[in-house]
Length: 253
Image 1 (cartoon, rainbow, N blue to C red):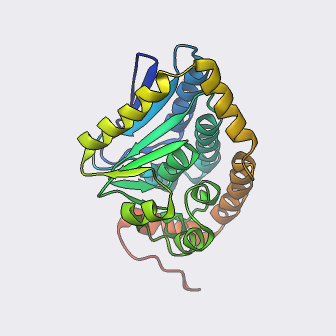
Image 2 (image 1 turned 180 degrees about the vertical axis):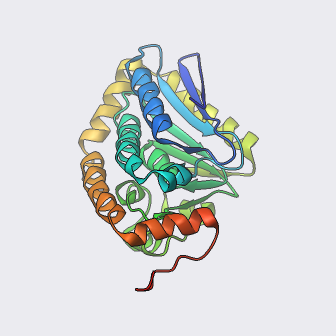
């Protein structure tokens, strides 16, 4: 798995390291879910920090894998759902420190987290509409208000970290990755210094009082992705992305 993991002073630091864009294939999503579930059960871990190396935080799923074998969509969907659920349901707080692009599966990771920080150059989006897929709206809705969510879903266009901050979607903005990591680690250290029993109960309580079940809603969303994948439009969108051309959704296609 292209993820680096360290645990020091009750802080688990999970680093996505899948160049060039931290796009994970079907197996890697499941491996990441396994790691997250194990960390949740680890009593030595009081807080989890997720960050990434490379150009951006996470570009989501490996579209090239799906373009070659569309049947992989079921495994990808299940892996993504497991990762998002593992983060949201993690027994300790999860901090996402995001830089560059936060797209697709990156929205699942950040949207399922408890605290999100970002660099000035970060941008958040769901380009699925242009990739022959759907999904992510449930987690996007944990970050952004209704109008922003619908525009992002329908157009595939991202929004900047500055605008995300104005919505209250992220805790803070930082000039570069070094400053981002320092700020995220400060919060992690503060949380790690608290009573572990109190922190775990606080996390459970906050999840219990959320107005909607994000895991259930994301699972419902995925049914629409499967339905879209049965269409020729979905295959055309994936082919166009891999071939670096505009998609053709005309009747003749």
